Amino acid sequence: MGTLEKYQRLNLINQYEILLRLAKSQDDEYFVKKYERNIEILNNGYVSEYYMLIEGISDEFSKEEAALVWDILEIYENIQYSYKKLKNSKITQDQIRFDGFDGNNESGHLAFCDFILLTLDRFAVLKEKGRDDFNSHSRRCERYEAMRQKWIEMNKPFEMSEKQIEFLLFE
Image 1 (spheres, one colour):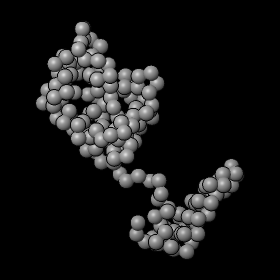
Image 2 (cartoon, helix red, strand yellow):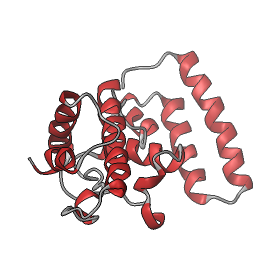
Image 3 (tube, rainbow, N blue to C red):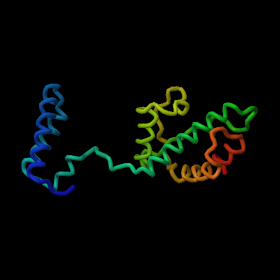
Image 4 (tube, rainbow, N blue to C red):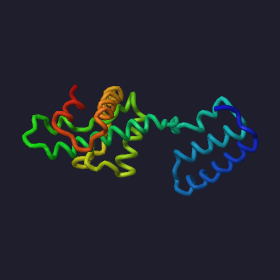
């Protein structure tokens, strides 16, 4: 974060003053201290400490990364839909379960996935039995990207045969 003009600092100070009063009215000591600290940083122009003002704000999540998450969720929804129509399948329910994204190495993908599934309430079939944790605890993006390329080569089918599902998941 770079430097701020005095009027920018004043604007932020005023906003933090409002937040500080709200925090005090709610007896929220954590935010009272945080907002007082931020006001002091801005009042004194402590440029080296400006990073504290943006703690907890994520970097932007690109359209390309978002498209991957949307596509993967759609693929898994289509797999779930298709699986239900299969008779005597060798594939098990566990094999077609959506794993999610790695919270340590793919945290942006996981956060966006949670946003789509839990906040936007999309792809209900992937939230079987009230599932709300989509942390795979291991990297998945590379595998998902390969799966997505296969799906595109297949012309993005909605309904898939057992062989198509196997091709996406196992080959």
